[in-house]
Length: 107
Image (cartoon, rainbow, N blue to C red):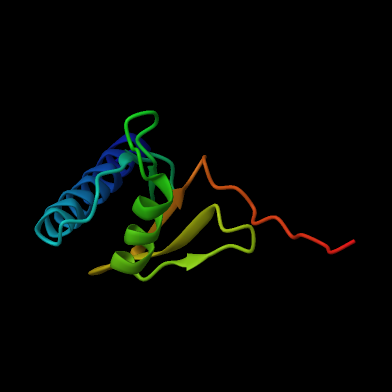
């Protein structure tokens, strides 16, 4: 076996996990995202808002966070965790349109 076989095997496992996750999400009516299967040694599935087609990007982001049980970062624009049913595969999602809540001060 060579490194290329290992990379192909890892990519096939990640693609299978993504297919399972997307089928389950579709059954649960979770809005679609654009997904990437990374071929690097780190096992990562990456999802982003379907820009410019998603008219409710924050709702989509929130739906995936709830569906996958992900942890959201401090800024609120990224979330990550493990893929359900595949604990060695990590999932990361990104909402490019997230804006920090503004704080107002009373003068």
